[in-house]
Length: 155
Image (cartoon, rainbow, N blue to C red; front, side):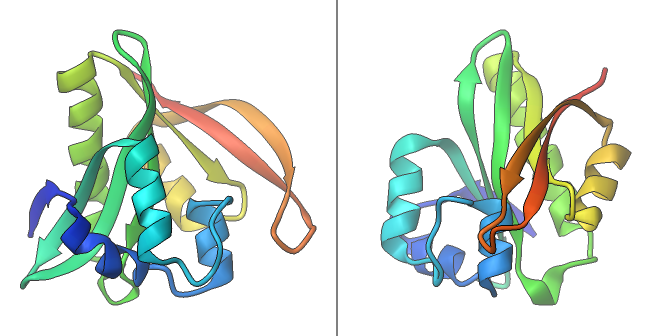
């Protein structure tokens, strides 16, 4: 397992990490299913530190940073792990990599946002030391009421 900066050559594989409209909404509410290279290109123009996890020459996870305010905060976003690789510690390792980038490159408190129904992610984020600081009511892609929890790393 190796973490590298994502390049245009990875965009097709990154897009394939999303397996359903529901998963896409969870990681990129403004995205359109199926996710594609152009949508990843748009993300690359707006976000920083696009990072992929490579295993056996294959992209198995992706994440990035956005809303970076050096010495204050930086958000971790678009965190995805290939279905076949979930439950193997790759998501945790990716988050640890992105947390380190927040701290080391920007001296910023790592933050992230997660929907209330994403129990697996909530459990991982809590284990890593993230705590909620705000809750934002939203409507899901299916028109259901959901809550977007905003969390930051507790030191």
